[in-house]
Image 1 (cartoon, rainbow, N blue to C red):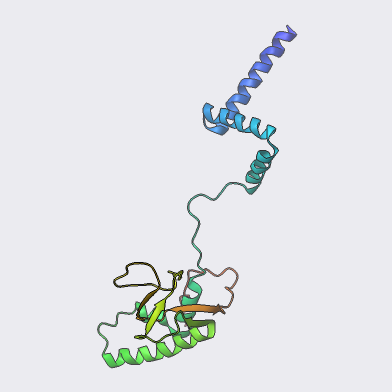
Image 2 (cartoon, one colour):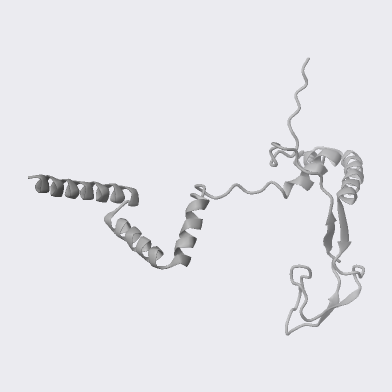
Length: 192
């Protein structure tokens, strides 16, 4: 009788373990796949180490990662120092040309000052607009765009339309701890 009870107990435990494994795996096929992976990991220490590494990292967050607000730091500086975003978001269609011109002069001066304070900017090509330049073989297409009747292979010789800009150095202040990087300028509320 004892042996029969023990056998029934072992069968019940095996069924329960199987049910729990299938519930965690999602299906019988996934449970069998998990057992196969466990068997291979038992025989292959490198695979076991990789699985341990993946399990230690934990689950990945659901959905796409939140984009970084880091690229907006310069725009936030141009807003705080030159009110550039305010100007660009404002409807100026009804403003007089003289009024717009005065605003542009002020914004231009302040924005230029902010750029020079926080960036070292240089031209990509050292020639002046309108000069003939030669684009050598192996040029960086992210730094030089060849336009017009482009045929054959470089070197290409043509008229410089724009010298391009490259940032050589960035000197941006660190973002304050806990500050939302997507806020270009906080709202201001004047209390009485």
